[in-house]
Image (cartoon, rainbow, N blue to C red; front, top):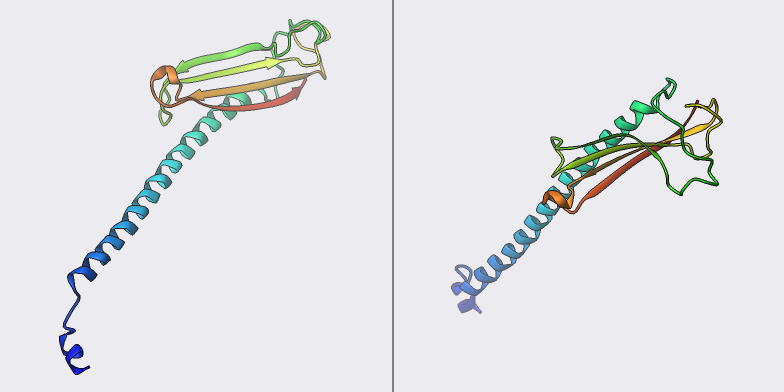
Amino acid sequence: MARLVGKSDGFTIVEVAVTLVVIGIFMAVILSMQAQVSQISVMNAQYNKASLLAYNNMRRYANDSAPSWFKCTDPPPIFRAPGSRYKVEESVGNIDGLPGTVKQEVYASAPYGCKSGTVSLGMPVKVESIVEYGLPSSGVGSGKKVVHATYVAF
């Protein structure tokens, strides 16, 4: 027993090698998790920017003023094609902070029809804002879409 105590001056090569392998595995897992967290953070920031852009586009038309921009020319709902809507605004370009080409669209529709003229008091108008970013045609990303919509009555 005294002989074993006298020989234990340090670690063996095998113990050191096993320890280094275990530490290496832990470091690889931690770095992989860090990369995933960073990627998720960037994607969240892009989504938030696109969402704010879509919301601001929607609020530009859905505000307290009368919708002079809306032309209610759709036929009554029974004669109208499903999903028909009036394009209010469209733009395509690059936005700082969003990948690839960004397409912004604002649509308006009168889901319950119009009484007469350009606007009918009390009839709801649906305002829908769509922002698509990272479009595949731009070669960046697989395309993400954010939609904000609201009903306004005038």
